[in-house]
Length: 558
Image 1 (cartoon, helix red, strand yellow):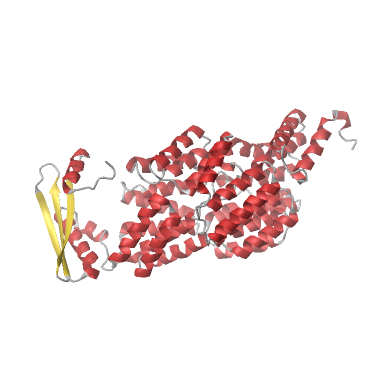
Image 2: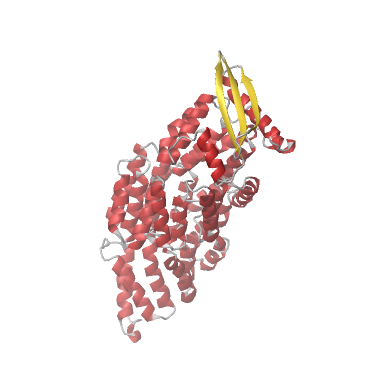
C-alpha cells in the first residue's frame, strides 16, 4: 500500500520486484551527547551485507556532516569511481547544517505536494529563519511564491538561492540554477540547463516536468507533452498531472485533458491552479455546472479564491457582461489583498484594465492600470500595464517598456514576445500598420506559447490581424484572426476570444466575402446577446452588420 512504512524487509522485496541490486539502510544512535551514524548495503537477492560504514557526530549540529562522510565512504566501497564520488560530493557546509531547518523544509515540501504552495509557505519561511544559508529552502520559496502569483518575491528568493548555489550538491545546484534562469527569463539557457540535468540524472523526473513547462512557454506544446509524459513514466506520483492536462488544453485535446485532471485528483494533487485549468476545460465544453463547481471549490480558500474569481470575471467579460465582470474582478482583488498578496491583486486589476482597453473604454482602462501599478510594480504587472496603455494610445506605454528592458535585460520572452507586441499595439493605434507588422516578426515563432505569464491569449496574432485590417489587407487579417479561433485551448475565456469574431467579420468584409462576414457578425452577436448594451464593440457590430445587410449596391449610401 502507498501509505505503508518501508521497513528493511519491505524494501528488500521492493528491490527484488524492481530488478534492483542493492538496498541501502541506515540508523542513528545516541551516545550521550554524541551520535553514531550507521549505513549498510545489502544484496537484494541473497540478503548478504556487502559493506557498511559508521561515523560519529560530536553533537546534533554535526549529524548531517557525519552522514555525508558515511555516504561517501559507502559509495566508494560499492565501487563508484573516486572522480564520481568527488564530483557529486556534498560540501562540508551541506544543504543545511540544521536538522530543525531540514525538518521544516521537508514538511514544507510535503505540504506543498499535498495541499499546494500557500500551505507550504510558513514551513519554508521557518526553514530559512533557522538557517539563513539554506539555499534549497530559498529555492522552494521562489517556486512557491511564483505559483501564487507573487513573482517579484519569487525572483528575490531565486536570486538568494542562486547566490548560495556553490554550497549545495550538484543536483541541487542544477535545480537552483534552472529556477533562477527561468525567473530571469533566460529561456534558451534554461533549456540547455534542463537538458544537461537530464543527461546527468536520467532517472530524475523533475527536469522533464520543468523542461515541458519551458517548451510550453515558447509554444512548442508537442515537445512539452513528450517531456511531461516522460516525467510521469519515471515517477507516476509526481505532481505533473495538472501540467499534462494543461498541455492537452493547449493542443485542443479536451478528452485527454479531462482524463489528466481526473488523474490529478486521484493522486490528491488538488490545487487552485488545477481548478482554474478544470474551469477552462468546462468553459470550452460549455459546461456551466462544472464551471460553477470549480468556483465554489475556491470560495473561502486564501490564495485560491482570488484566481478563480478572476477567471470567472473573464467569463463574464467574454460574453460582454461588463458590469458583472467588473464586480467579480473587484472581489478577486479584495480576496488577494486579504491573503496579503499585493502582486496577485495587481494582476487581477491589470487583467480588468486590459479588458476595458479591448472594449475601447479609455478612461476605465487608464484608471485600472494606475490602480494595479499602485499595488505592485512586478514584471508581469508592468508588462500588461504597458500593453493596456498601448491599446489606448497612452505614451506611458513606451516609458514602461523602456524600464522593463532595462530591468530585465536577459529576459528572452520579454525581448522577443512582449516588447514587440506592446510596440505593435502602439503602432496600430497611431495608424502605423506596416511598423506594427514589422515589430511582430520577432514574436511569430513564439506566439502560440504562454510567454512566461498568466496572460498570453495569442496576442501577437490578434494585434497583427488588426494591423492587416487597418492596412485593408482583409485576407491576411483573416488568417491571423483564424489562429485564435483554431486554438481555443490557448485563448480560453479571455475577451479577445469573443471579440475575434467581430474582428474576423470585419476582415471578411474588407476582403469582399460578404457571406462569411455576415456569419461572423452573427456569431459575435449571438455570443454577446446578453451583453451590456452600451459597450462600444456591440454598438459597432450592430451598425456594421446592418450596413452589410443592405443590398450590395447601396452599402455606400450612408
